[in-house]
Structures are given as C-alpha cells and as structure tokens.
Image (tube, rainbow, N blue to C red):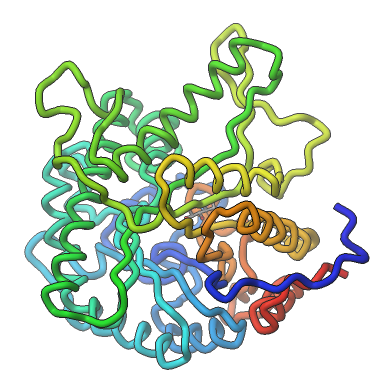
Length: 435
Ligand code: IFM
C-alpha cells in the first residue's frame, strides 16, 4: 500500500482502541491447569511454561499503568479459572479481589475493561473429567461465571464468555497440538457444542445478575470468534470453492448462527433428533460479534483431501501466517451480515520478533477498519493483540506478538517502536500514516 501522501484519518468517537491479553499467556505462577500440565510434558515448541510468562500477577498495577501510558481506551483481559477454583470445592477469594483491584485501577485510569471468562485453559479437575467434551463442564462453567460476575459485575459491563471455541476444539481434539491432545472427531464436535451452550447460559446469567443489581452502564455480552477470510486457493476450481464453503460453515457460520439464534446447525446439532438443534432454547444471545482476525485461509483440493495453501509470494509473519488486511474488512462485513450485531475486533495482531512490520500491519488493518465503518459496518472496538510478548500456546514464548517486549531476566516491559506508534494513534485518535 502506498500511503506516503495519505492524510491522517480521524478515528470515529464510538470506535474505541485498546489492547488484549489472556490470563494464562501473561500471569505466570504455578497453577493446576491444562496448559501447565501440557508444558510439563514438553509439548511447547521451545520448552517454555506459562508459569514463567510475564509475571503479570505480581506486576498487575504496573501493567495497568502501561496500558494507560499507551493511551488505550479499553483493555481486554481474561480471568484464570484454575486460579479462582483450583479444585471443585475450593474458591480463592483473595485472587478474585486482586482482579477487582486491577479492574479498578484500569477504570480509575479511564480504561474500559472487557473481561473474558474462558480463554483456552481449563482447571485440571475440569480437564480430567473430559474437559469440554463432558456436558458437566457447562454447569461447572455456569457456577464459576456466576461467582465472577457477582463479584466484578459492578465494575465490568462488557463480557466475553468464551474465546475461539472452534480453535480450542480443533487444536485439542483433531490436530492434537494443544491439550488434551486426543484425536477424536466426536469429541471435537462435543467440545464446540458444549462451549456454545456455555456461552448461551453465561449470556443469560450476566444479563440477569447485572440487571437484578441495577449496575450502571449497558450490559454487553458476546463470544470472541476466530475468523479467517476463507478463500478457494484456485477460484476456478469447484472443489477448492467447496472446501472454502465447508470451512466457513464449520468454523464461522454455524457457531455464529448458534450464538445469535440458539439454533445449532449440523454438525453441532443433529436436526433429525428432537431437542438437539436448540439445546438451550431459541433467542438472541449476543450483544456484539467478537472478531479475532489474523489471516486469510485458502483452501485447495489435493488428492488426500482439502489442504491449506499459502502462495509463495504472499507476505507472511514469523509463523508463516499470510498477511491480508483486506480480509479484516471482509470478515467484519460477513459477520455483520450474518448476525446484524455491532462488531468488536477482539483480536488482531502479528508475530514479528524484529518489530519490522507491526506498525505497517496496524496502519493497514486500521485503515480497513475505517473503510468498513464507511461501508456502514458498525465496528465499535479494536483490540490489538497483544499488550506484551507472552506465552503463545504451542509456540511457547518464541512467537512475539507484543506492543512491548518483556526482558526474560528482569521482566521489565520495553515498549517497541510499533507500540509507540500505536500509542500515538490512540492518543491523537487519528490514523497516522507509517513513516
Ligand atoms: O495468542 C492467541 C490468542 O490467545 C487467541 N487468538 C490468537 C492469538 C495468536 O495466536
């Protein structure tokens, strides 16, 4: 993109800018959860363990100051279930209190919190009972959500129930690169279905609790879904087009439909079985659509089946993910057309250890965001993933998505040039062209 002469576009007032993290990726500390055990089994690319990640739990208030210094108007964080409820019968009130302090500090600094209840990690007592493949996880999650929302709901009006259910289930139950690492198609389907059910229950619960207490500010609840811009690798090939459609249905359209109508399409519901298609009743269970966008997904038919294809000449990040900012506009438009809800871009970022392409990435993706707004898509939040380099799941600490680096010895946060650039955009509320 040639943007040398481009003037700095104004960011509309109702599009808040911020950054995002999740608990397991930054908090650090010894906790009884699925990712600790997975790492102890030596299954992260660089041998790293989330117990050593960023030490945010000790530095929470310092990090609140960092968020404010980056001029973020909003910040997405998650709660670590295993920290609050390390066993089924235990509850750590002091830990919940620390989350209150962090959220209070953010609010005092004028930063709107967006809080996620489940971001990939299960307490071991949930994991050992079958994780999300077991229906009982839905009830357990409801109990956990009730306690968290009752304790924090006066400070938090905006909630994400579950993060990327299809990614969680696919990596854990088909690709087996994430816990529990057991390949079973039925388990994958059950995990997505139960997480969608949990979303619906938590949606109702959060509205009920905040409404009953007459807590101020409009309650807004959604799920954060991973969206790829699905494309046939060779548009002229019928099978490539079919593959892209199937992927879009499984990972995007069907889960989104369940969130906004309560109806579970095949394969997450079996329409020929009574009560299977609307297990939690019918209704509208989303106040916004959370869009996590990183890359397009090109599907190509090969003799062994459908495969992912990345063209050799495509720009990519450190993990080989194709970069395509226009895809962000496409997925936001598709999500708005499908669900009719305001869009929160709940994640968007790039693995870039040298910080060589992040500023341009931010510029181009925000430019597409503004273009989508001009096209009439009500995008109301943009969260850059992520505040600081952190534990990137199977990649461990090796993938660097942060606006700030973290010194591995001292844990000092060092804002990168791209972090300073983003801070300027947030401060001036103008999309400043990249130098
Ligand atoms: O780091 C993850 C995040 O936890 C969920 N969405 C994708 C990010 C980058 O892989």
